[in-house]
Length: 163
Image 1 (spheres, rainbow, N blue to C red):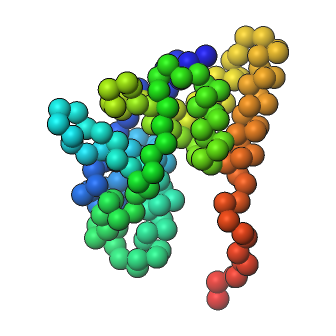
Image 2 (spheres, helix red, strand yellow; image 1 turned 45 degrees about the horizontal axis):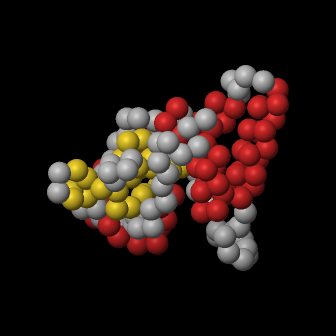
């Protein structure tokens, strides 16, 4: 199955100069946890970063400033991992596994953002897969991806209760 069959085609974006309160509002309004950051590049905008709900929370905590004073450019991840619409779902899952991500922007051959695919999209599709064998194969791929995403990225830190 190809990514284009599962991807979300209507994607809300933000810009590097936007503030985090705007992005948080977008995430609330469209019920998502990740927004691609785009910048005008000639005729069409290109993806220059990604920002997640966790990024917003951590910026608020570490900077101790209101979200309206923090710009996306200071918080976004600039390493953008993506897939193409004609890539297979298995290829997208492999990227999610190796990069420990839950979602990927889908970018066409011209560098245009054409959608987003999330592990949740694959899970929903797996529930409707035709044969028992194909459901089992998809379930195994999903389990591997979720295991890879959930693995600690760095040594565990000691948990300290707040006083």
